[in-house]
Length: 318
Image (cartoon, rainbow, N blue to C red; front, top):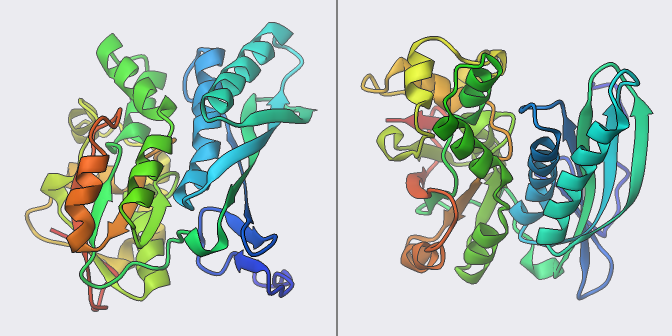
């Protein structure tokens, strides 16, 4: 892709593609900036309404990761003509309900015929230009807090193989349909330095983007990272999505593991997430405030690492 033209320079473009951030941010005036993002994917569950909820939650997450509030959304849907339109309606209803829960509105969208269903949103939000949170402002001495458990890609693989029990399925759906709004509000109130949401590149991939963008090394504590119940056991069995191995092949040379980190944990750290949580980098003095503000968060959260001076590897896992 190196032959493609670079983004045209504009003094009002506050966040572009340079640091692989979660969304673009464009300054409209001294008090308002626009956050713009887009995301869509194929179904991860069979129920169309639940799929719509998950896809919409995932799309809105990028706005929250920048510290903003989503306000407008447009549907993006691909749909085969061999399926009844009622299924499409259920997908759109799931998306509508999550966008409404977020306090935003859907204002239309675009549909194309495709062999496999795909759904997501083009989402817009707003923020004060001085309040924008990026993935490239982690500071040495910061601590890292993760607001959802990992392992969702493994669980989705188990669900597709029809090996998940009802408890595992319900927990996965809860994680994937929980908006990051509460976690975003908590980190904004706590004066976080940096943030990214954990999606397709896994916890390691998105941590690497934060480390490279901030020119620091991130140390993760493997025994502190929350994991969805059952994911570890299925990882031991080898039920790991291909995306985890693709992530490992792409970034593995920038990550180093202590000898005590188990292979199944490595797989879960590379595991691509769907609608994952926020990874928040915050000054140590503000940590207790953040943890207090996160009380009542619908999903498990934990202190999972720290930010160090740049070392040989961008990511250290112990």
